[in-house]
Image (cartoon, rainbow, N blue to C red; front, side, top):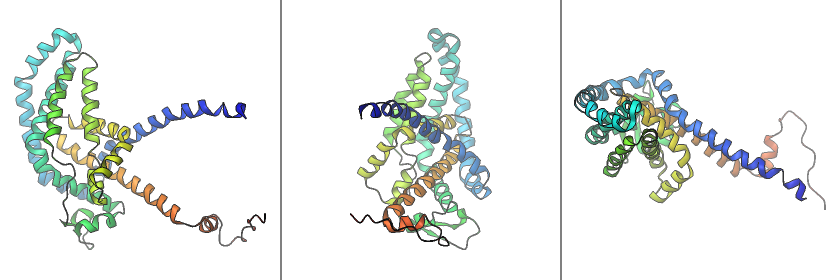
Length: 296
């Protein structure tokens, strides 16, 4: 018995790292999938042009001022300690400073409503109208999912605006002063925080309590870290940061749809009786399965 059990333990140990790698890849892929999905659905474009394009022009002005007056002094200071790699840290540092300003001034007040619309419209396109309908008015006869969206009938928040989050982002900026490891650490730490909010709207639609939300986040902390890291990298791109906010929202909705299908598929399977499971495995045109009861 002992000889049979021993080979199985190393297999389990090898399986776990592979599982973490697969989950990291899946989580990191969804912000990129969101870009493709958003671009392939022109119905979403009006949300971008009408609400966020002016903010992009304003963010261009902010980044222009920062790179004109703040980049060279910070680069000169970092070059003393970092040498040739100082420009990378200086660029990320300035981009992070711009992100703090943009988040503090605009993101929580002007962008969140648009992200809710993108998230809900994507779920409707993916066949989850029943998840959205209890929480906002829908117009079934509308030509596309965006025009189907009416006013929310319950609080609608994609990502709650948090002063704590902005303070954390500000305090993490000095990590870029650390040679080599500082910039990746800054992106991972802030990305992990960002990722935990990626499905806040889904939790809201499901009516989860604060405690239940924390449990869900704890179960997927690893996945959210990599989703948030890629989303953070996209948000650091000047001018296009607001565009990538919407595409990452689309990616979060795609990920949510997958989880919804997996969750409800499991629930339906659990609700079936053993006799139904056996019957489903046989074609109705085939002869019935043999008698399986054990007479003993």
